[in-house]
Each structure stands twice: as structure tokens, then as C-alpha cells.
Amino acid sequence: RAVLYIGPDDTEVAQIVRQSGAGMCVPPGDAARAAGALRELLSSVSTRWDMGLRAKQYYESHFGKARSVRRIIDVMESAVRTGKEASL
Image (cartoon, rainbow, N blue to C red; front, side, top):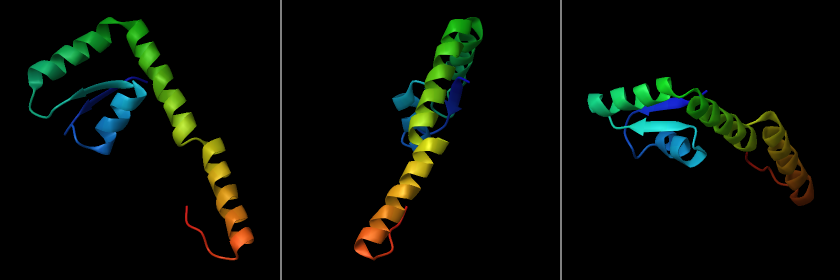
């Protein structure tokens, strides 16, 4: 689903929303801009669909099950090779 993030611009959430193309970011206190972004999202099914697809793709490539399993395997293989604990 498309994201409408209302919050500080210098947060990780804002960075992910922008980087992924999954939605729009609006600074806190800017009601006019928030209303405009919401109107834009509500008026365009294709925009919402595209943003939602990009959100799903970003999630799957950065946080999804396959990525998480791969990271765990990498950590375990590293620990076996070096004989040391590794961190995720």
C-alpha cells in the first residue's frame, strides 16, 4: 500500500519512503501539504498501485523472509569459518 508519512524529514522512515518510492513525505505541521498529498493519493488509483508495488518490492529486497534467512546463513557460515560469534 502507498504510504503517506507525516513526520520529520531526517528520519529513517522518511528516508525509506523516499528511497523506495512507496509514498509521500510531509513535514509535521504542514496541514495544507498533507491534505494535498492525501487528495493526490485518493484521486489516482494507478499512483497508489504503483507506490504499493514499490513498497512491496522494497520490503522483499530489504526485509523479506528470503533476505533474513540469507543473512542468518551468512552469519552462521562466518562463525563456522572463523570460530567466532558473529552478529546479525
